[in-house]
Length: 467
Image (cartoon, rainbow, N blue to C red; front, side, top):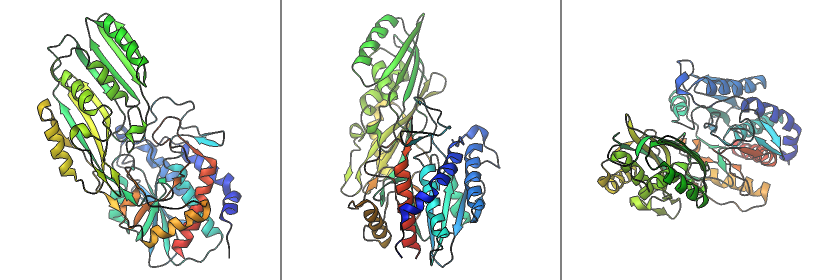
C-alpha cells in the first residue's frame, strides 16, 4: 500500500500547530536560581515536559515522566527499541526580537518563537509522525519511544538521568539539526581562561566587562564600564569604530565614568563565523587605550588571540579532518570585575584527530605569557560518527531522497545533538538545505512548509525503520 504521507500531515496540521503553540508559550529556559528537587533544571523545562507528555497521554500513548528531567512517549511491541530524541528546553532569548519570543505568531508562513526551530517544532513533528503511524494502524515489529529532554542546551543532565534509569535504545535519531542527515558530530569541550582582578596601573580603570549568555551562543550584547580621564577622546574614537565595523552601540559619559554598550549578532556556537561577537569587538576597541593590570591583559588577550579567530589559528589549534571538517572556537561568555577577576569561556568543537588533552596543552602553551590559568569546563563530549554504509543511515537518506528529489549525502557538524547518545544514532532534520538557520538567534522561526515536510519525512522514515 502506497501511503500519501504529505496528505496525512495535511489532515492533522491544525492540530499539530495547536499542540506546538502550547509548547512554545512556555518559557523553558533553564533557571538555576529556581531549581528544586521537584524541578531539577527549573520550573520552565519541567512545565514543558509535562505539557508534552500530557499531549501523548491525551492521544492514548504510553507515557512516562523520569524524574521531571526527561520522559518518553511509547508505541509498539518487539525486541528492538528505536529512540527519537528531542528536547523542550531553549536557550535564553537575548535581545533584538520583533515579537514576544514566548507568544508564537505566524508571519509570512513562518512560526516565530523561541524553540520553534530548536527544538520544540521538530520534536512535535516527530511526535505527529508517530501519531500518523499509530492512526493508520500500520504493522510494525519494533518498539519506539519519542524521548524528551529538558537540559539539552546546558549540561545534558536530563539524558544522563534518563539513560541511567531507562533502557538505552538500540538505534535512533534526533530531529535537531538538518537534512539530509548528520552522521558525524564533532567533540565539544569548553575551557575557562581565568584572570586576576587587578585593574590598576593604567590611564583608564576597567570596572566591569560583560558579554554572552551561554558558552554555545555567539554573544550579541556586550557592556563595559570604566573610569577614564580621556572620555572625550574615547567617545570620538568609538564613533569611528562603529562606522568601520559590523556592530552597533552606544556610549554614555558621566564625569569620568564611561559606559559602552555594543550589539553584534547572535549565532549558534557551533558556527561562530555566522555571528558577530560583541564581546571580542568591544575588547578589541578598548585594547587601543591604556588600561592597567590584568584588566589590560584581559583586553589584550581577547583582541590579539581570540577576535575573529573562529579556527583558533592564533592559539596554534587550527586543524581540519577530511570527513568531519575543521576545529572551531566560540568565545561565549566574558566577565571581568576588580573584585572577582575575569573569565573567558572558550567553547571548542573538534573533529576526530583532536583530543581534549591536546587542546588543553596547546591552549596553555599559547597563553603562557599572559599570566592566566586554564580550567576545563564540564560536560565535554567526544567526536561521534556512524558510517555511511550503516543501514540506519542508508534508510534515512533514501527516504529523504524520495520526498525531496535531492541527492542524500553524509554530513558532520560542530553542534551536539542527542543522536550521539547512541552508538547507532544520528541527527535527521528538521532544517532543509534551503532553510534559513535562526537557531539561538533573535527572531527564531520555522517555516510552515519545512515543519510539514519534515513531519511527512519522519513518518515515512520511522515506518521504514519500524517495519
